[in-house]
Amino acid sequence: MTAIAGLTGALREPEGRNAGMRPEVPGLDLPPLYREVRLREAGDAFAHARAIAAEAGAGTLVWSRSPRLFDVAVVLEPAMPLGRARSALYVGMSSLADALALHAPPENPISFVWPDLIEVNGGAVGGVRLAWDEVGELRAPAWMVLHAGLRLVLDDGAEPGETPGVTALAEEGYGELDAATLAESYARHLMAGLHDWQDQGFQAVATRYLERLDRPRAAQRGLDPSGDLLLRAEDGTQARHALAPALAAPSWLGVAGLDA
Image (cartoon, rainbow, N blue to C red):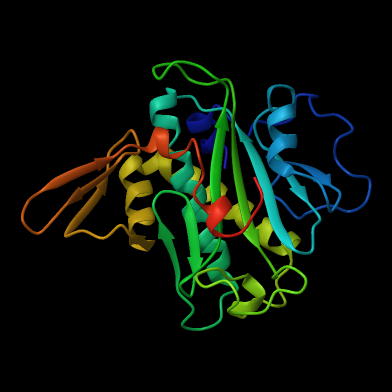
């Protein structure tokens, strides 16, 4: 686990920061390099994590206790230039999918729409987004926030199938899965994914992500170290989709019916 610190400059032991933030009631069962910040049901994990990232430091995991939404944000401190560090998005996507797969009903596919949308059984349920300390592409940001959001249940009054292409985990057989259990699984998979990135290089990150990528489709697909998506058609035509501008407006916030 300590190897993660080499990649992210991150997930360090506390060093006295974030004192008093851990809730007094029993918290999540997390690996020791994480520090939990629990919000009330109406809390906004993404906004809170961005507000405290510089002070709280790497390994801080913020989550809200909402029974309707999975809302988790993790602070990282990348030891690499921003242009490459944005690929943490792909680690977050694969880690969240792997955590879901632990609790998935049989034959219930989990897939991605590039770059940030997660689908379960063909319906959008949420995704992952990033925020970072503003620096140039060639400098390492002082902090990044990796946020994962999923719809656990449909809104009150909504009927299954009412919004084509959009679903919730409870509608796809995850009815017993709560946000706390999923947060614990996700934290462990995220730690393992960051370790693999450091130990095996970016190709390990790309391979795991591309295995679940459903759209866009092409004869050949790849990711370059900056996170851009590379497509080659049957006729040899090539296309590049840049990651950085795509992250400016996360696609899943609207598609999955989740508020920004």
